[in-house]
Amino acid sequence: MCGIAGLIHRGKSSNVGRELTDMLQSLKHRGPDSTGFALYGNPKSGEHVLRFKVAEQEDMRHGFQIHDQVRERRAEVDRRLDELGARRVSEEEATEYAYRYWISYDGDMKKLADYVEDIEGAEILSIGNALELVKDLGDATVVSSQYGLGEFGGTHAIGHTRMATESDVDIRSAHPYWAYPFNDISVVHNGQLTNYWGFRREMERRGHRFMSNCDSELIAVYLADRMERGEDLEEAMHRSVDELDGVFTYVVATSDKLGMAKDVMAAKPMVLYESDDFVALASEEVAIRSVFPHEIDTYDPYEGEVMVWQS
Amino acid sequence: MAELDQAHESYELGMHTEQLSGRTQQVFFSAEESGNLVYPWAPVVDFEKSGEIDAESLNQQEVNAEIRRLMSEGIGTITVRNPGAKHSLGVGILSRLNLHFDGSLGYFGCGLLDGPNVTVSGRVGWSCGENMMAGTVLIEKNGGSTFGAAIRGGDLVCKGDVGSRTGIDQKGGTIIVGGRAGAFSGFMMQRGRMVILGDAGKNLGDSMYDGTIYVGGSIADLGVDAVEGEMTDLDREWLTRKLAQYGLEAPNGVENMTKIVSGKQLWNYDNLEPTEKKLVL
Image (cartoon, rainbow over all chains, first blue to last red; front, side):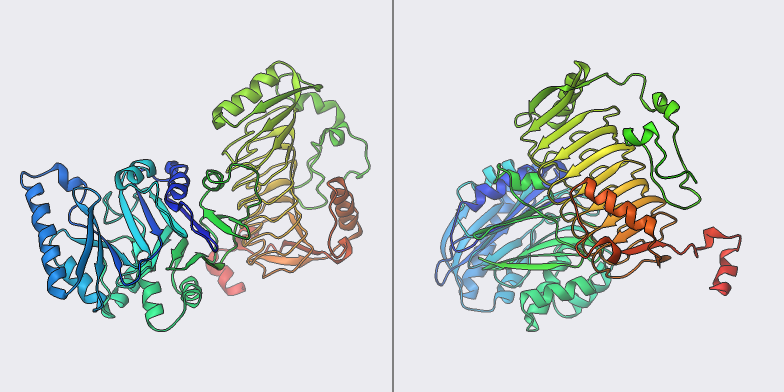
């Protein structure tokens, strides 16, 4: 089933970490397997935030040498970053297996991502000036607390509660997906794509990599590919509604925009609240009520609809 | 077919299907049968007695249980405050009751009803009024998708917009939408009437077997086997009366509404084998 949510403040920052945690926690019944956050903070000039992991949560419970392996993999990530000339400005250990680095790097981002992910067990969750992507097993409160997201300040955010139906319960299959290797683009999705493999093969032929077998990842890669070819976000989203087959509602975010798209049959839910300075959207109104407990006017976007808001 | 002005008690009870035509629609109740229209275990309530529930700190099961408790005490007018868009509120009520929600409902609100009169001051989520048998549900704001799925009787009214697949599998009763309705509204409709005062999305009435859809605005396109029918005086009279009942008006007048019915050209309306049908079509 899965639950998706997003919010954007227009012209101001807020505690989007806390707000999104509350929204996703109220959608826990739609997917208790994993929870993911794509948070857009206040960018520091000249620095990128790199979120990556070197093992699955499940791996930490198995194997005699996993802790040594994790240390070795992280050391290898550090070595490769140094080798590429990416200066590590600061580092945080979010969990034993997931990290948050601020790096200064002017080179080819795809080369950096590919080189890091070539290390066994390593996966870059996101690279961005504003974007920080966090996902792990458990409900929103657990993940938010584990990664200290409760005080995250920013302009907008999207998130996902996952009920695993077609791929494993692991971090790799959890949403959101970063639109590798593009800065600051992330996607969450509720639905099923029926032409996933055909498009995946096409994207792979064009040089894009997939980290999972989850159809949702395709949307992120697809949008990135279209934007790489010169389309803006809204154009790429309109094209996706025409070209991607199946039932879906997805939410996408860039450094300064939030967008949503619904398939032509409107088979997956989305409720929307919009005011002059704030937009919130979610699979169910209860999520919006978690940040707006008073009576508000909400509505459902229609079939084939694409909407984009600026922060 | 009986005269429409025939004074049945069933009209007063709101149990009459009020169908105008169609071979599956001639179901009438006599006044003498009204006693059979009440479940023997249904609580006897007094509409003059009122009660209130604050749903803010209750989950949906607790709210529904509280409604039943008040009904068992003979309270016939209940107001639920702070419903907070919780799911499945006000479901499975099988007797007369005046129920008001002061706020919005989540998914599956007011489903499986058989008799109560419900008002909602806010909006409702997906599948409101699903499988309703009798009674009225009046929503002041917007509704989600699958509004009135498979209803069999009663009046389900949303003054705002509703989502896609409105009245999917409708088997009777009346659905009225004050604004716009999304794609596939009236999908596989089998009986009853649907009124959309605003625009209708694409594939309207797709694969409908019977029943009638009236549209006040534009129609994106018609679904398979849905065709335009001829508006009659009876249609206009019924629409005028029904809309007035809920304080609604057709934006361009009922005389300019479009009537959609089943073309009944699908294979299941004759004895032709599917292969033969291909030749005919």
